[in-house]
Length: 276
Image (cartoon, rainbow, N blue to C red; front, side, top):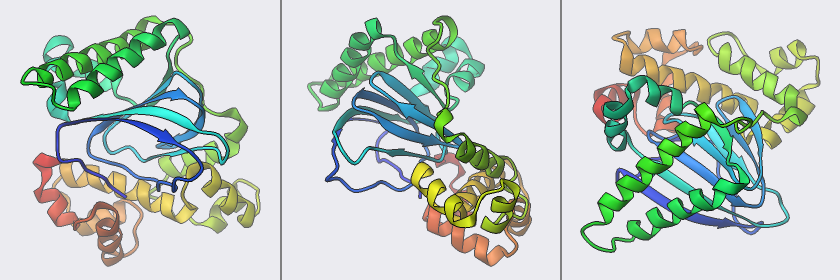
């Protein structure tokens, strides 16, 4: 599932409790910064599983497959900041494209206790200005986003023990997701995976969906489509060749699956390269 937004920047403060529906595993053509103000949740991104607590900040690159899962009991609150490439041109000019590439890799930063108030104040300022206070609001938003990203870079490079480790309690599901992510072009099925990892099909199916938010087959297709997108935008290979290279045995099935997830055909996706 792919999601888009009409503007170049968006920020929301979201409260969640057990009465709200479950969001499916998805991706989108823009960056996201997810900051947990309070509560806890499980966050699945690409092929990694994290247990989030208060003060954890998730970096979601554009195109990354991800999903947040919240406990049945209790409530949580979070800021979600979304922005497109156009907001990062200044970062390329200031620090270079390599810094941007390193900064926006999928991962989780545990903001130190003494710095949470600072981060939350930045988020609140951007939220306030996003409501359109006056003609200066876009400039305040841009400087707020700049400050947030520079702080993220500082944490990544100079703070100790802030990069959160993956969830060790779900190590097996982590290994299976990683195997799929790295071997998407191979023949993959529930039977193959249960045999490879020495667990029953029923346990694998139920546990994987509970932890990652999607079934095995759905996740395999999502990973294959993600890689197909890269080939469509970065190569001149035919649609049929891309389908087979990404693990699809039938180009028609590939086209149907692609349209279901991306909302358009592979050809149209390639033609819209500049907006992706």
